Image: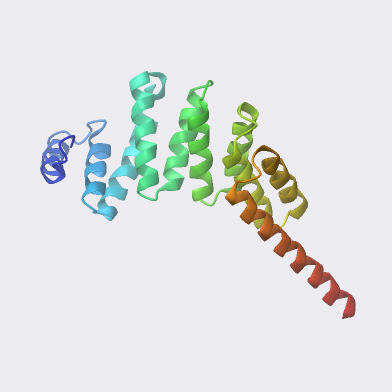
Length: 196
């Protein structure tokens, strides 16, 4: 794998899998190799199985090696568009590590949002902001969720907070434009409603 010989690595890992199907990391490793080979369907199946197996392993998150393996697995799950599985692994890591770092919380927020779990993504973003009140990405995500849910005043508050930190942020500028459009649409609906 390190030499980039993914076809040979796949053959070797398939042999390991046949000889020792309960090997703790073979599914994750083979899934990673298959991602490199573009075999997305098989990779997704193996990575999802690896996530279930690793989470069921007693005490895996209690060791530094276990945390590193789970973090790497969550990265692979996101690459394989398995955001829900990645979110479960990251949530497991965050629960196991009371001193969860900001990067892990940011990853959890991303995974939740990519899995269309707006409530979970919002909660993770708010946790990031408790540790880093200047995190533009979290503020942007919270403003976007507020817009998507039609909470325009809340969205305006998040956008204003973000622009107070960085007025030149393109993402916040785009959200502000969307907010103006949403407010205009809301106003027009009100006018049409009054004339009916």
